[in-house]
Image (cartoon, rainbow, N blue to C red; front, side):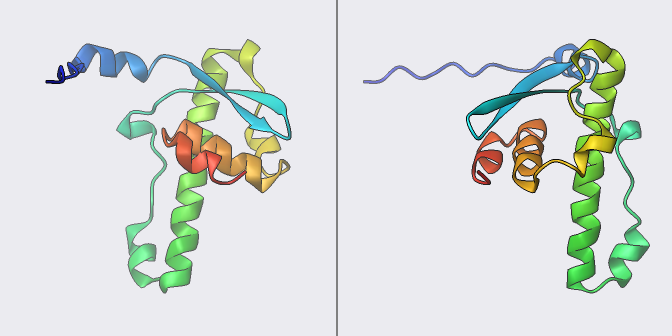
Length: 122
């Protein structure tokens, strides 16, 4: 008989703390590490999507709108951490579009909590 693994439970206080805590990780690209930092967002900090534009868009335009939303969300999370920890800045909005797309996909996967998605773009 196997012993059941005890599930940990979040407290509201711990979840609230995540929105103020600078989290960190790194992306491995071509055998070099790129350290990154981010903070989780509260709803008021989330980028907004123009739902009327989404409703009026064809499928291709909708994908583009949501891709831009995802990018804006990742950048907002990184910028929030950069404000809280200026000594840890490695990535900025200005540098985002200049780095390889493969690295951006990995960064997005890590920041959004889906490490496997980021790893699939190496």
